Length: 197
Image (cartoon, rainbow, N blue to C red; front, top):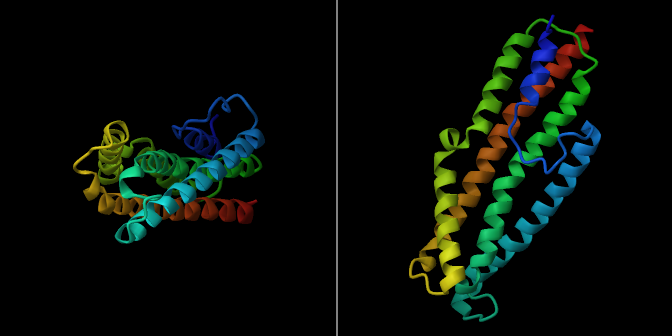
């Protein structure tokens, strides 16, 4: 007989992600790999976004080292990294929760928490439906930055500054909202299970 905790485990592992071959490893190894990949993404985002911001600020000063026209590669790298990072951080949280609930039994109220968790993960698995504006902006930025990178003569590149800022802000805000909701669900589950046992 499948317990509600078993159902929750199945919901947790239903998150679609790019685990880079970690699926057959243990949970601790998966978490460690994801932490390393997350750290690499964070460092790349900080580095690239720092150059992007510096090029925008220093453009009126006619700084040739950080000209806006030369930032296309940094925009590409930061977009890819920023799109990957939230899933990795969420997956680390889910795997840590999966480790903890192995010792739990069913408790009153777990059905509602499981339904909420399933809805959160369903939205994460369908980003085109749940995040159409950031996905559209990412697609547009990737096309525009690739165009600028290949030709160095994209006439629309000068207008991408505002879109890049908007994209970064939207992705970060969306991540914080989802992560907070997910974290509340996990905390409530763990606290209720601990009190019930």
